[in-house]
Amino acid sequence: MRIFSGFRDAFKIPDLRKKILFTFFIIGLYRIGCWIPAPGVSISNLASQLKGNGLLSFLNLFTGGGLQRMAIFGLGIMPYITASIIMELLSAVIPKIKEWHEEGEIGRKKITQITRYMTLVLAMVESASLIVSFSHATSSNSQPVLPGMTWAKGILITLTLVAGMALLMWLGELITDRGVGNGMSILIFSGIIAALPGELSTLYRTVMARQPVYLVLIIAAALAIIVGVVYIEQGERRIPVQYAKQVRGRKMYSGASTYIPVKVNTSGVIPIIFASAVLQFPLIIANFFPSLKGFANSFSTGSVAYFILYTGLIVFFAYFYTAIIFDPFELADNLKKYGGFIPGIRPGMPTTNYVAKVVNRINLPGSLYLAAIALIPAITFVLFGVGQVPFGGAAILIIVGVALETMKQIEAQMQMRHYEGFLSK
Image (tube, rainbow, N blue to C red; front, side):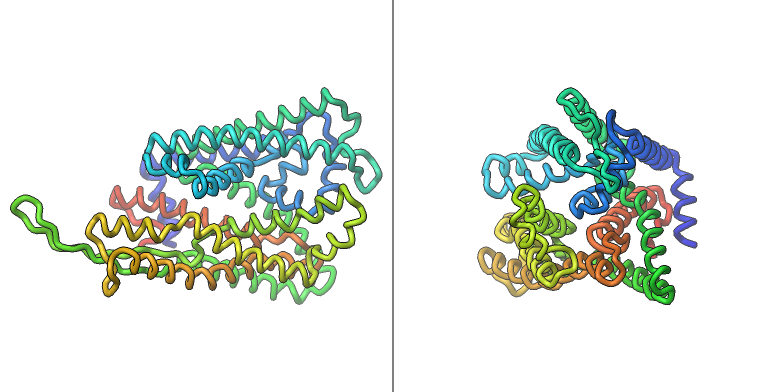
C-alpha cells in the first residue's frame, strides 16, 4: 500500500507531477517512433531474419522491437551507450580526457560533445552494416529482406536511422534535464519493458507445448531471480572513514565519521555487454569465411564452450572495468588531502592497498553473480528452446537498476517536500 500512496503523493506535488508526465510523454514519442519503419523495408521478412541471429535479437531487445521493423528509432540508444563506454575507457589511457574529468562542469561539457559526435559516427557505421547485411539476406520464405536495394535507397535508410538516433539522443537529454531519472537509461528501460509481453508470450507457448507443470516452476524462479537481483544490487561493503578534528578560526570542529560504499556489483551491466559482443565475433567472421563456420558453431548458445568462455569473459571484464572506474590511489589521495583516514590503516600507500584489496575481494562474488544472471537465457534455451527471457541477462539488471534509481530520485524530491517516499521506513 505504501507504493500506491507514494504514487498518489508524488502527483500531489505540481513540480514533480509535471516532470513525471513529461517523462511519460517522451516515452510515448519514443514508442511511436519504434513503429514507423524506414522507407523500402519489408517488415515481415526482416522479423523472420532476426529469429536466427543472436546478436540482432540481443540488440532488438534493447530497442523494444524497433530493429525488427527497421524503424526510425531502430538503432535505439545503444550507440550513445557504446560511445560513453569508449570515452570512459579512453580516459584511462589518454591523460587529456582524464584532465577533462577533473575540470568539473567545463570538462564534462567537452566530453559530452565528443561523445555526441562519436555516437553519430557509430550510428552511421551500425546502420550501414545492417543495410549491407540485410541486402544480401533472405527470409525464411526466400524473399529479400530489403527488396530492390540501390545506393540511393541505402543512403536514405542510413540517413533515416542516424537522424532518428540523433533525435532519440536529444529526447533522452530532455528527460534528464526536465523529467525524472537518467534519460538514456529510461529509454532503454522502456524499450525492454515494451518487449516483455512478446517474450513472455513466446515463453508461455513454448513451455505449455512441452510440459505445462514447468510453468509454475518458471514463475517461482522468475520471482526468486528478481528478489535476488534487487537484494544484491542494493548490497554494498562499507569502508569506515574517520576525519580528524579541525581548527577553523577560534573554533574546533570534531571529526566526522562516514563510510565509503563499495557495491557488490561495481561494474553494472557493462561486463555482460562486452562479453556478448566478444562472443559474437566468431559468428560474424564465419559469415565472410564459411570454412570457419564449424569453429564458430562450437561457441554457439548452449554449448559447453559457450558456458565456460562466457563466464570467463564476464569475470575478466568485471575486474577490468572496475579497475578503470575505481581508482584506489586517487581515493586514498583525496582522503589524505581532506584529513580523512580509515581506522587502523595508515594514510598513503597502505590505504591504497587496503581499498584495492577490498574491491578485488568483493569483485569475485559480484562477477560470478553477473555470470549467473547472464547465463539464464542460455539455460532456458537448452531446456525450452527459448533464448530471450525477460528475467535473465542484461535485461533484468537494467530493469531493476533503472527502476531503483528512478524511485530513489522521486523519493528524494518527495522527502524534500516532507512526503514519505516509496522506500521510506
